[in-house]
Length: 309
Image 1 (cartoon, rainbow, N blue to C red):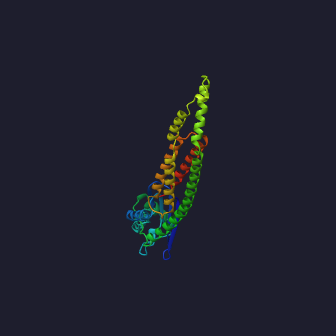
Image 2: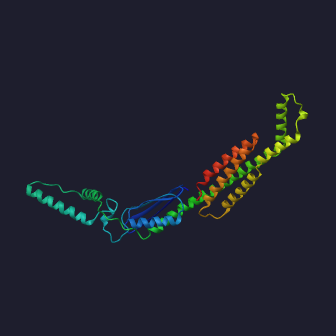
Image 3: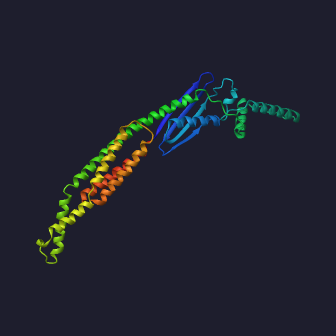
């Protein structure tokens, strides 16, 4: 199910800010993708935190550190440049290199213009980014709490979507029940219709052979029609459909729990199987049209059920 959660918290002392964004879309399984500036151990903890709250979906977690560091003992250079900051030792090395270059310039009689502070920071940042030697920043103590806050926003949005989905599924089950009721009504008097249809057909066939209608064995025709009616009896299928609909509504009315989506999906498969069997047995045009409509409703149900955990 889709959802979005956003949370952030600032550090007044150093001007740093932690920002957490969570996004999820529907997926059959739980797939978690994490982007964060801290170490691998932190990522492992964040993954476990998400897996404890979410059952399925493709989830993207983005953690950003903006404006500085939450570590009071940290070097101010650690918040500059690239992800992970700039090592103070690296700055010392660059300054020593500049001093050596100036000395060589003086020895050669060449006047070298000194770089500005901004030039120096740009150079050190690029150097740290290329070398990949910068250390990862220290995560703030409240990282877990901020992720929990974003999770609360995401789950609240998913719950609202779930409530709307429950209402839509209930409406589709009502629609299917009405179609099945119409199908049951269309089958009333099916025996009489088949009897008349076969008598007329026999009279038409025997008329060409100069056989009087009175010569038709009514008992034999009735026996054949009885066989056809028995083959086309769909009372068992209708009873099972009613049972499946009752069970599906029971799932919708129950407290949310893992596995309800699989239960509804199974019931959807069974509903489609029963309606398909009815379609292969009946012969009336109105009944066939209702079977097609019912199949269409079941397919819409199964599409929506894919969003249920």
